[in-house]
Image (cartoon, rainbow, N blue to C red):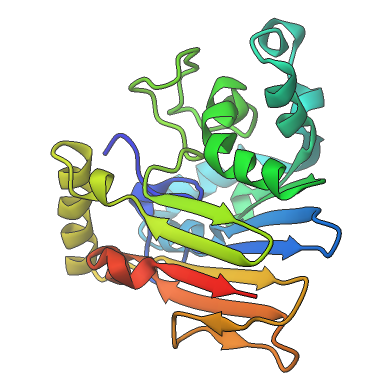
Length: 260
């Protein structure tokens, strides 16, 4: 599989039962500003992989295991040679985005958080449409240690990036939050067919990816289309958890519309 699901977002072809959890948190404020945070916990995946590894290999890996605990700003972290490839709006998005990475290979810990803040819903919608593409061009994958990623200065390309999102469209207005699947991609020959074939394989192996979306609203929700969504007492927070592998077989199940 060349490209697979995001959000975002990381090592999408290796999910195991209860070992890859992704949470998307969107906070929409009354003045039109916003905060986005993506939290990915791959520690369970590391533990599961470790359980199948011979003790002799574990000891060797533990001795040379990598440990990282770092936070950096995407815009500031780029060298000038890469920075010059971006226009002002693209640089602005990257400068509004921070990444936090905690990796302790000997103890099977791997966590990644991405946080973006902006002043308007126009900036938020620009983030949704362009974040993955810009992350790829900014060589972020190399900085976090994704050795399978090869830098590419084109808008597309055959190189892998965990931050590209081919499956969903997001749109936020002053009165609604909408997420819908890109049916043309999921039904297309090639990558869409590969995705469906992989889903069947994952299900046959008992694999699972848990995704939780949390939306903090500037005012109470008037309606939520998904009956599985949980509303807070003041109706200003919407929370929905799902098994992505199960729902991608039926893209309509992934459609979410919140009116407020």
